[in-house]
Image 1: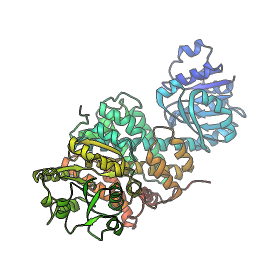
Image 2: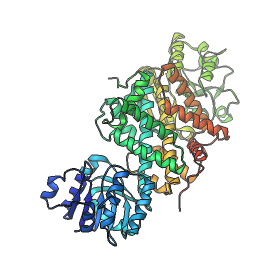
Image 3: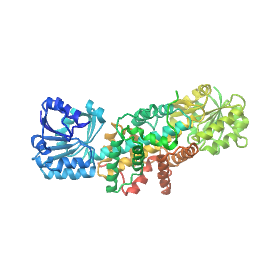
Image 4: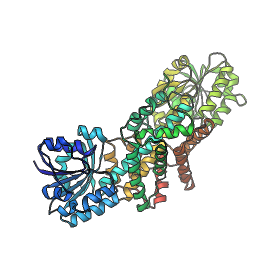
Amino acid sequence: MANLGFIGLGIMGRPQAGHLQAAGNQLYLNTRSKIPQELLDKGGIACRTNKEVAEKSDIVFIMVSDTPDVEQVLFGENGVASGLSKGKIVVDMSTISPITTKEFAKRIEENGGLYLDAPVSGGEVGAKNATLTFMVGGREETFEKVKPYFQLMGKTITLIGGNGDGQTAKAANQIIVALTIEAVGEALLFASKAGADPAKVRQALLGGFAASRILEVHGERMIKRTFAPGFRIALHKKDLNIVLSGARALKVSLPGTALCQELFNANSAMDEDGLDDSAMVKVLERMANHEIRAKD
Amino acid sequence: MANLGFIGLGIMGRPQAGHLQAAGNQLYLNTRSKIPQELLDKGGIACRTNKEVAEKSDIVFIMVSDTPDVEQVLFGENGVASGLSKGKIVVDMSTISPITTKEFAKRIEENGGLYLDAPVSGGEVGAKNATLTFMVGGREETFEKVKPYFQLMGKTITLIGGNGDGQTAKAANQIIVALTIEAVGEALLFASKAGADPAKVRQALLGGFAASRILEVHGERMIKRTFAPGFRIALHKKDLNIVLSGARALKVSLPGTALCQELFNANSAMDEDGLDDSAMVKVLERMANHEIRAKD
């Protein structure tokens, strides 16, 4: 049982912190809005600053939105960095820039702390059911210390490499998911407009090289017109933004990723930011003046 | 045991015809170049024209390259159409235009014949091992008659719908495979240039929503630098050409497919048409001045 800090108690952080607490750990909490009452009722202690969280905890978990938010939490006034002492571990589970992450890790180590980047996939459902996938970057001995806590919140936990490599793996994941959604969208739309039953095409293709989790899950959403998230377009756009600015800095050209970002922009133009990312197909459909539907 | 015609005895057709023959069927053969000796040695009969093949056979299988080749076989001088009589079945296993296929089927039926479009996936290995996937379009009763012969050449055999729908499913397959190769290529390249081990990233991503057969098979080829085909870029380009001209006719915009076609064009510029389609990543690599390699 340990003293754990948790900063960022939103849709993801709240159930994650709950799992850590349920295992008997003492939580020190801070978040931008109100700290969820159930965490306080079960013994969680509210802190006034992120510095205070760091002072009272051995490991500080962070789950916020974007790179500037993590920077503020770590290095803003009364930030985590100012409350660190030797051997304390900072674990950033937000999805942010891999390049900036390397800088953050360096600055935290200069403050005597240790750093893991540990972005997750699996979304709200994974957070609630403790089935998240963790992609981790950092030192192996630090990883081994935190692993038991990752296991309270997730299922597949992989140390990819040094600091930043967890965020890099997450970026790669978001690239593949976006482009595969586009692939499935273009294929089912073509099939449907050519007069075939997209449901039968999807079924036949699942047996061969076109098979993917996206064809299975997102392909079905496109056919059944169920675009409730899942994973919201707003968030996928944010993640592709991280990828594309990283790619610019690294001098890597990602034409397919850029295209998907622009398709998501067209979703935004129709107020579809709150839909599941499989709704990228709605942009393609409007361009084709045709909507995918299974024949029955 | 039936009288079967087989036109087009290339890399794919030759082993396929062999499987039909090995099951005891009498083959009537024609092809543009020389008829393979082993098929003649085992009792196959060489015909001088495609008309003659049609006259002597109950079912005529065709396995040639592209839409104009099928048109020539069917409706050229002394073509299959001129040798048909009521109830004979034409089975086109080539990968060609779904739209033109509907016209071909109509013309064959006007000649008293029946038509199935039955493109395959699985490549040379699938043809040799009789493990091809068949995506079939046509009437159900015709499909049922030919099914036992498909089963001699393949494993997964699906009737998608009416004529053209088999080709449409194949087109959808080729869209997804191309775009997923691009997805995996961009992701592994980004990861590698950001300093992560692409092999570890691939492994971690296979557990989540980014999982696909392409990440598994083609992702590994990109990392291990094994670009021997597999499925050649030249053929995938041909197939995307069919898709994109079909899309133009149907008024469907496929921006991702168009991009992949252009990337394959850049492969051609470097004489890479004979490589496996996973070598699309080499174009992205040249654009990034960086080559994917696993750390060891």
